[in-house]
Image 1 (cartoon, rainbow, N blue to C red):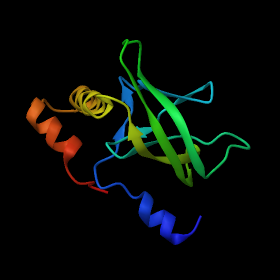
Image 2 (image 1 turned 180 degrees about the horizontal axis):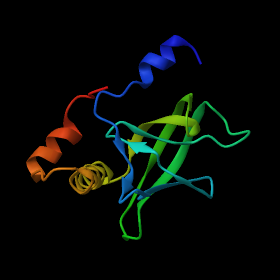
Image 3 (image 1 turned 30 degrees about the vertical axis):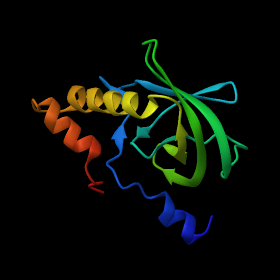
Length: 136
């Protein structure tokens, strides 16, 4: 990928680790395969890169938050592949979210922030983190 794609991928909002109690809590279903979501924001998500997986192109997805019945459906594009200590990951940007998917995503991220905080924070504080600028 070129520099234009790298800078286009950078999210404006904070990326939130998609974990609760140290365990993955958000999963992406893409082309019939289930992938753990590594991090999530209002702009996109990252998943582990699979051997032979494409690093560009768009796709439909379904996000699931553990076992709750709500689903977020949409269309996203792969924008980069990054190597990390945990292994390679694919960065994906939302192109569209169906129905009230944006509202559900906002709620999910707020819950993840509250549950993952090392100190007590209010819902308002968590919402500020979710909708605020990236700190990285």
